[in-house]
Amino acid sequence: MRSYIKCSVCGYIGEDGKVKQVCPACGAPLSSFEHYEYGINEKRLSNLSLHLHPILVHFPISIAILSFIFLVIAFLMKSGTNGEWILIVKIISIILPFTIIAAMTAGLFDAKSRLKDAVGRIQKRKIQLGTLFLVVSCLSAILINYEVFTPLGKVAILLLGFLGILLSALLGKKGASLLAVLIKD
Ligand SMILES: [Zn+2]
Picture 1 (cartoon, rainbow, N blue to C red):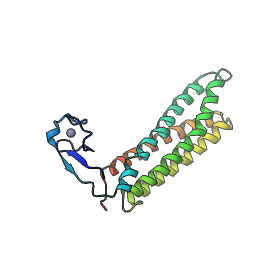
Picture 2 (picture 1 turned 135 degrees about the vertical axis):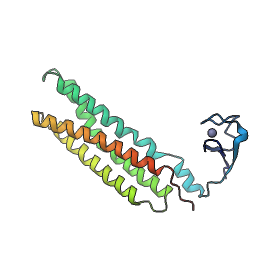
Picture 3 (picture 1 turned 60 degrees about the horizontal axis):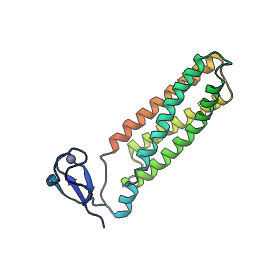
Picture 4 (picture 1 turned 90 degrees about the vertical axis):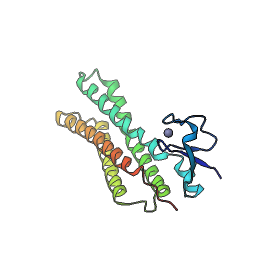
């Protein structure tokens, strides 16, 4: 059974004995710490301590942004000279949907560990936005890999890319609003 302490200045929670001298988050002295009870069982706590969803969401977000930048570069270059960029964009566009699926799966797992009602109103919205992000990324991957590079096709691909970034930002904002929620057993 681990025991925890909480910084009374900033609210940082650490393991007892692992906080040395000052709060690693705000720098307050060790004397400002007090004993803290999570009030939830060890199994849920250990699931939560993996932080799977908050870690995995970085992949689709950064890949979506990177893919958009690479697409702009590829489309700005003369066709015939941009072969390598197109190849990179093709590969990235196929990876993106899988990272979204991984992040969504981890999100459901985290919600189950964190919340009594794993699928509340905000979580439903996140699943809808995540599914839309997945659909958008699949459409984009199809257009890119079938080389639908007509002027209209390029506009569609860029719009889908931009929409993907927008959706991932919205998902991040919704997720942040859930961070403080932790229902006790
Ligand atoms: Zn602190």
